[in-house]
Image (cartoon, rainbow, N blue to C red):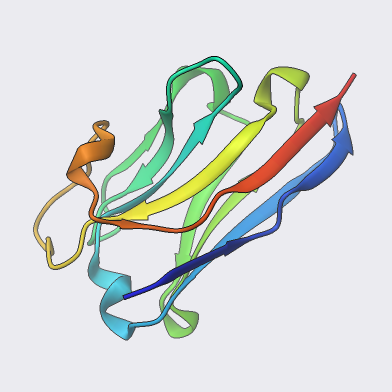
Length: 126
């Protein structure tokens, strides 16, 4: 299974971006999935996650009210809508998923996820 991430870019503070992560399998719609980010000199952190059922959603405190994670099952695609971007959101963003974990919610630990997309750079200028 491959995950293809896209949608990063260079924007000004206050702008919006939508990241996409498309999977090569239709069963992706049932996998717990999330978006991590890693800023220079910092550890990778979970930004948002969505359970396999879609019933559990997690956001790190710094993005609550600004970012929205969602999934389009028909397109096998996970999204991260990012609004009101701030310079501190600058990072490489990665999508991640845990295959065949249909009943799981999510994890904040990157080692729990076994599928990763390549990173997409998001740069927010002030």
